[in-house]
Image 1 (tube, rainbow, N blue to C red):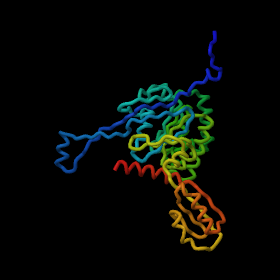
Image 2: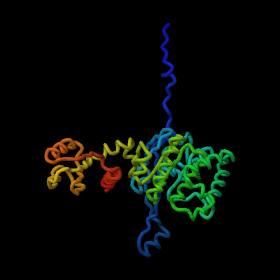
Image 3: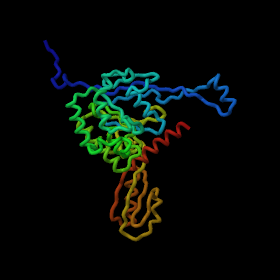
Length: 345
């Protein structure tokens, strides 16, 4: 008798299960429509008019363990609403979601101990107390063993360089220092999933860079799963390989960061350094002139015509240096958002 057997590697190959699973998730709000004028206000006391607003419109999304995913979209796109549903803060109107096998809005204690939510515009620390007091409260809430708590706290305050600030009231800290403390508080119980909603909003360039470096290092070492919303494309470029774009409550793109540029940008930027003194009046015939300050110039050129354009310019001008670059990510994302706005109109 012949028995077909699979090889050991094939038999043991198991497809990884997503750590975050979202299926047809919907969230709608009933909004009171207040009319102008005294008479309308009086009528509204007895007969109110409402309309339904769809914040999230049936999205599907899988995130694997250890991914660092950017969740992008214009204001009102449904990003924060989605994060709030995944963290159990609000309940969806319909659809399903599981995070590490838990249904978030069931608000099980077992789930609460495995994730963290940091919102750049919200504070979880006691305003008038030193951060170290809030950290002690977190220890009790999450029932962290004293030795594990101290070990984790020491690691976080050293990585974030905030040890000297632990005894200072939170209200006296700068915005960047407060955000560092917020991150430390969120990570004290060593969550497996971290939801970040605009963590660098309002920060200066140095503070943004410090937060980015910390998150990059921490995620690489701990292999935690992070879902990040941000309007700062430098955050996205520095931290995320995968980008999900949501607009009008629907996912419009899900793929690599490079893929966003390939799909939504039909142009490249050619930077030129001329070594001759010939006038640059002929540049507009080859593309849109972004900058022209002899001996330097920049042209926006269609992707398909880059090689042809370079050949034509080299035939007419002496070039000391040339570089071909993608459009800035901010410009590409803004173009995506503008397309969505045009569709809505």
